Every structure is written in C-alpha cells, then in structure tokens.
Image (cartoon, rainbow, N blue to C red; front, side):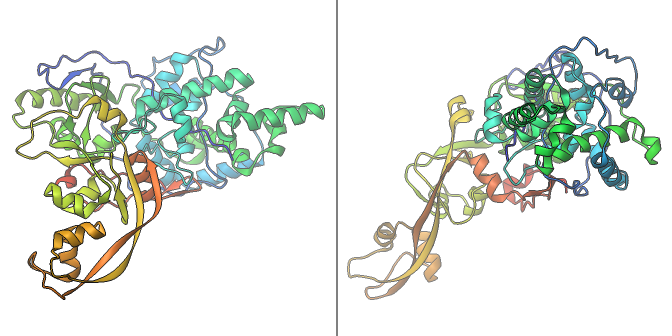
Length: 515
C-alpha cells in the first residue's frame, strides 16, 4: 500500500534577536509564547484502520477568508474550516471512538500545543483550510518522534523516499522528516500539489494516504462505469485504512468544532507563537544548548526532534527552536559561557572491525561508542564509516566539517560468531592471534580471562570468530531507528526505552511515542 508521509517545514515568522556572541548564533525574532506543560509519556492507541498521512492544499483559494484577530487559537482554526463535511457510518464510528477517549484527545492536544500556531500560520499564508492543522492528530498524535512500522517518521509521517522528494534531508546527524519547520513545509507543499491534481480536498487527502496513482486509477474505473468520482463513491475501491482516513479527520474536526457537545473542555491555546528560531554558526552540544536556554532536555528535544546525535552540526542554515523567554535566556547565558560549546568529534573508520576493537584503539568504552552512534548489537563497522566520538584534550576545538555533516554514513555488517579453539604456537603472541582471526586483543583476554598479554606455548585459547551474514548500508540515523525504535501499530507508537550513561546521559531525550 502506498504511503506518502510528510514533515513540517514552513519557516516561522519572527523578529531577529541580535546575539552578541558571534561564535555561535544569531537569533530570530521572539514573539511571546504559551507556557504549557510537557506532553505525557503515553497516549491511548489510535483508532481502527491502518495508518494515516497528511495532505496539502493549493497556495491560494479565493473563497477562503481568515482572521487572526481572535485571541483563541481554537476559534481561529474553526473559522478557517473549508473542507466539505463527510457524513457516513464510518464518521459516526470514529466519533464514538474519539469521544469516549477524552484523555487521549487532551494529551494529544497538549503535545500539539507547541506546534499548532505555526501550522495554522503556514496554512493561512497558503490559503489552505485550517482543519488540515489537525492532520498530525491522525498521523502521529502530534509526536514528531513517531515512527511507523513502514518506517515513516515525524509528525507528518514521511517515508524516506517521499521526504527526499520534498527536500527533507536525512543524514547521520539529523532527519528533517522530524523537524517541525521543514516537515510542515513539505507536508503542506505536497497537499497543495495533490489539491492541484484533483481539485478536491477530500480526494487530495485520500491521495495523501493512499497515493496519487491509486486515486487516479480508482477515478478511471468509476468514469469507465459512468459513476461519480467523489470520495464516498471512490471508497468502494479503497483499502480500509484510506476509507477511514477522512472519517478520522472529520471526527476530530467535529470534536474540536463543538467540544461542548462531547463534554470536552479544551485547554485554552493563545493565538500567538510558541517558539522562535535561533541561527547557530558553531557546533553545539544538545545538552549545552538546552542548558543555555534553561530548558529540560525533553522540552528542547520536543522542539528540535530532527537532531539524531548529541551534537548539533551545520552552518547558520541550521535552526534551533526555543520558546520566546528561553531564547532570551539562551542569548544571555551564551554571553557568559566559558566552556566549549561542543564535546564531540567525527572519526573515520579505516578498516572494517568490531566496536570493541575500535573503542579500544580510541581509548573509549565500547558501550559509549555503540550507544552514541546508535549501533545495534552484532554489527561490525565498515571502513569509510563515520563515528561520533568524544573530543580528547589533545584534539583541536574544531567543528565537524560541513562535508562530513552532510555526507557522513555509518555502514555496518551484521555478524554472528562461532567459537574455535586455538593452540598457541611456539612463536605466537596475542597480537598475532588477534590479527589472524580479525578480533581485538581485548576480546581475546576477555574470552579467556587473561590478566596479562602473555600466553604460553601449548596453551589453548577460545576465539569467537565473526561471521558476516548480511551487509547493511544506510545512513546511520535510518539504521539506528529501524533497529532500536519501537514499532507503531495502527498508528500507535510505544516510547523508546533509553539506557543513558556517562556522556550520553545528558543528550538522550525521553522521546515519547504515542500509543
């Protein structure tokens, strides 16, 4: 089944905030923000059929008139409703599902409160119906860290290939499918394209979920039979997931439109920006950025979910989002900061080997190298790969180059092992034995409980010989997330379980999945 997932990207309008420390940033404008609690850790499972996808609208629609005079963001959204209502039994079923799960609705609203103003602003700029701001409710429960079983990612649930079609970069260091600004921009652009193709928002939404080719084929079948080609008529050709996609949005639209009819008290959302953008010109650790902004890591990561590593790389085009008041604190604290902004460097692997061997050469613990680079168990790292490692005292305080930040890959071989016994020869030593079997001296000592590097002639050693069973060549962010992130079933995503230690304890976020 075709899935086209998109991530928010529209740039946020803000006044430039002058940053007096040029090494790291120039800040964008700081409109006031709402002070809402962080999103909860878990969310109720999403309703019935399959997975959903965001859709986009035409850039201008003369019949739509919006106003931002209200102080209530909910009212602003309701005023911009413009997609014809759908009424059928599937809508009734979804209304029952959502209206009996008010806790789930409120948790999703609470999480989405960070992003809704920005999405509504971008929709109005393009003249698009404002109920499209509720699509992430269906797609991901407003969780920018959501990952589907099909590997769609982000608030708008973009597949990797579709993301690249809409200029959403997916590198070792960041995945723009999860970025609030970039994914939103891409999602709305795609929805506009689909509306331009079909001239009907309901069909555009169906195509967003099912694929434009599938909708076109269904239209041809209907036309060949002389039958109508509206959404309801075409639904006989649709899979259950797409049949329920628009009914889900209609149900949420009805509940947001008249919450009192469902005994629901929506929290007040001020009609003002929640965040502003900061431009960075030097590498900065996620931990340091959150510390300078005086934000908890989970809140920082909720606004900046695209960063896949503990360091934020890139030039001034790389944006950091912060609540208004915290952006001012960031500027103030940055002026006083005396320590290094980044504690991480990039290391290029010279030959294919196990993490334990690599870590030993670098003087690091294997667990740290594996965790910070999100390397699954039983993987060897291939020559040419890039690893993120802590800077040593001897290293110059240089940023990771733009070429590495944009092109770095982590290429891994999946391995298994078999145990062999080796009888030490007269002229053997641990280094020669380790080289023969492509293992590390540290491994040999561990497997054989050796305290020293000396071995005796005739001694029997046990060796775990690696056996390559599969080659995996993906950007490390893609590998790590498919290997470690929980899966999303029926659009429900379980929380990622992080075991954070030492240096990485400061940057690992509590990235929640809804479900």
